[in-house]
Length: 293
Image (cartoon, rainbow, N blue to C red; front, side, top):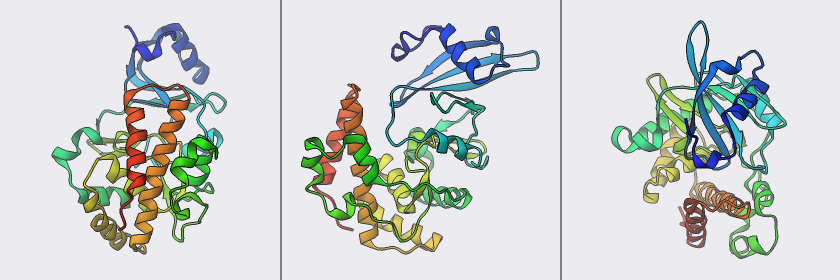
């Protein structure tokens, strides 16, 4: 089967070699039906079938497409060993030097495709509370200022955007209340299955303000910003967290600052996809007109 154009230059023989470098006991002639999954920006993902005498099973091969600042593969590997099976998928194998990873395929639908027809904002609160309660504490802290520095540095390119922002968004400040957060909790990283919602792609897991995950999910679903204060207040009530407009403003601003930094890094690295430049433009627009909650 022909692979997606983004994977031109990677043959099925090379894909089999990548897979067997991770799971040496699997036979080359049992690895078939390679399908590229569209949508990934930092990683390419290929679904394949492993045929064996016992049964056929589907898996996903993750192939990092470019060096990713702020991604710690050692920490990621350690995290997957602790990830509760109730909220995520532990990989079959992960290679720390290359970032190659094989995971079991799970049937489901992306939240971004089904939210509007099947769910409400109340479902987001239930999901987020369940997720944060299930996650073990980690030593790593997720820092938007540190990530921004890794993405675009402190030069002229970042100055025009960053200099106009309040220091509370751009300078290191330890949140008063933190939980283990996903930190890239967009609706493309949530799989709705018959057994519940499964959360994917844990490369940025770390201690952070839980509101950051809430804002990420809310904005990723393109929900009306006017509904965010009530949603955040309800989140605080069900979790027992402190809530203030200032705290929400910080999480909201840092989310969009991260989005701008990520999109800028992608474009500087040669990613010419239209949606990436659109994301950078959208982030600049929001950052220039930040709401006060």
